[in-house]
Length: 114
Length: 114
Figure 1 (spheres, chains in turn cyan, purple):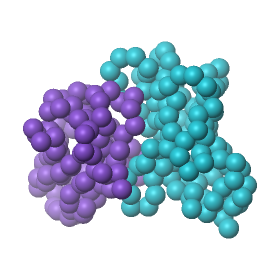
Figure 2 (figure 1 turned 180 degrees about the horizontal axis):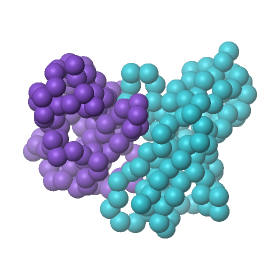
Figure 3 (figure 1 turned 180 degrees about the vertical axis):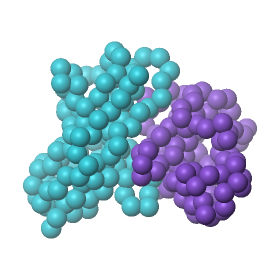
Figure 4 (figure 1 turned 60 degrees about the horizontal axis):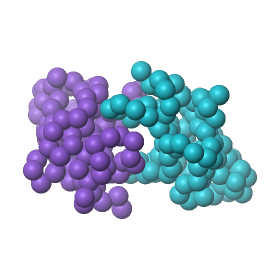
């Protein structure tokens, strides 16, 4: 069965600095990978996804993620953090083939300080 | 705005009771997914419907059931409620029947069991 690990409960970064939110996954075969963001009292919003192709995926709000097959990782990155990026971030995975549910990580809270 | 509408936003009830949560998917989306989010269990996939038919089942209790109607709206029924059922319940929708496509989330129904 597939699984996702987000090893950091919280990431703190100063505004203007680069940010990284880590995600590693386990899945049979090749993966579909997603990042979602959740703001307080709101549902999850889709940020970006990886299916195949370039290992660097660009998404909404200036976020990007780097797929690394050998390390089974899909870290979320942004070159310059904004205070408004403070939110809860979820990584999710499912196998490329077959009919499988999407499995979410436990979430990482990003706190960007002014 | 994701285009997914969930009602009610808040629900307070007592143990042993039954409630119904409603979801209207984004226009054009045929799949509806239900998730439960709690502090101790994180975001858990419950069930998926596609064009009126059940497609995938996750960690859904036997006391819970769902259906998708011909107009594509969906209802999640929770019965014999227990204190541990207190959580945020999200509905999400997507165009196709496979979870490889981005899902669009509603803002959730917060269920509190007293």
